[in-house]
Amino acid sequence: MTLEEIRKRIDRLDVEVVHRLRLRSELALLSCRFKDRVIDEEREKEVLRNVERTNRKLLDSSFIRTLFEQIIKECRRVQSEGHLLAGFQGEHGAFSEQALAVFNPKLIPFPCPEFMDVFEGVQRGLFDFGIIPVENSLQGSLHEVTEILIETELKIVGEVVLPIHHCLLTVPDVGYRDIRVVYSHPQALAQCRAFLQRHGFELKPFYDTAGAARWLAAERLPGAAVIAGETAAEIYGLEIIKSHIEDDSENCTRFVVLSARDVETGGDKCSIAFTTPHRAGALAGVLSLFAQAGINLTRVESKPVRGRPKQWAFLLDFQGDSADPKVIKVLDQVREKASSFKLLGCYPEAKS
Image (cartoon, rainbow, N blue to C red; front, side):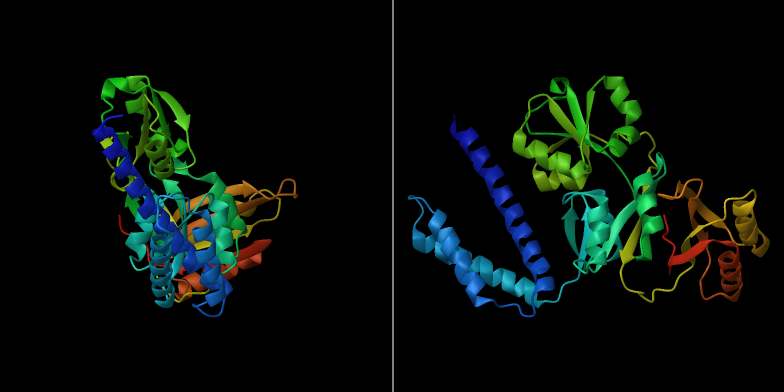
């Protein structure tokens, strides 16, 4: 091992230390949802005992204690500032996190492994908000998310339309010709299909674009690359081999923001979910109400209802304000025709 290699390993460890400290502060914020005060002296003493017990030679015990006293102090500060938490699916650097910053840069993003974790976190009060992707201009709707949205009791309080520009990322010193395998979320792989086919890479699905970037930065797998955004490259110290590799330069994804509370946002776009009786023309009868009122539908999705054969549920987005008398009238008519109905939210329509 050379001096340069040692220094590179130190640099990677330094980056990982910062990531771990950020994760610790995020968990400290989350812990506030389970306690009624910031300072818990017994818990802090337990933390110091644990870290001192795990120290082995080399590092001075007083250094370890002082270091963690400062970490605890910083986490206290973070906890006392009254931050609002927002869950997103993926790791830091994911496009969902970027969309969250567009919606409200003051929210503290919290990574979640699965979409359902975001929904459940908001429902349980762990998160003040959650953000999820619902449709992409190239790949269409995310059916898993649509199904959960139709069933959820959460409210949609906002939306973001985010341009999605993918990059091919590798660890430093890996060249184009060295790449054999590319890892990324299946949606990202599909959005870059033409580029990937031209180069004949072997494709490996991963649960998240930024998660793939973080994994590659840690594993340093020879011949491997990932597809993710520029932010992920910056966070995890990867090099951008090629930018804008998506099939369409206008590629974008629509995200919706969720809350367990009825946040008074007002707006010019609404989302509803409903079921109809199982008979011919039932859905057409509902849709015709919007046409007759001159209300523009921007999205219509459907899914079978679990445990109820031949029963379908529908998700509609339309342009209009739920406080508008014309919209109120149509929604009342929909309630009459539908077997079940709920207004998911009225919110400002995102501008591309």
